[in-house]
Length: 70
Image (cartoon, rainbow, N blue to C red):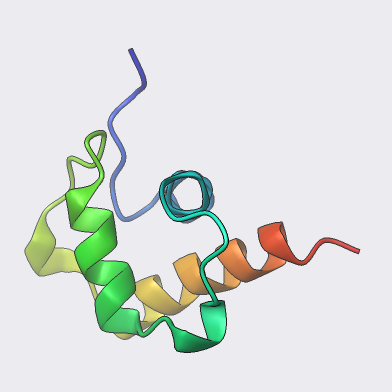
């Protein structure tokens, strides 16, 4: 079983989101969408109240970099 994810696991969350939403156009993904999709991840066990724009932007950045590797 996978370890539970929390807001501190931005890279692992980004990987899980990329797996759950392959081919999504990241230019159309809002921070609110990242929040909702993260909470919907089966392995996510973080407190929904602890999310903020900085955390969500970090997840987005990790996801963007994972999809757009050089």
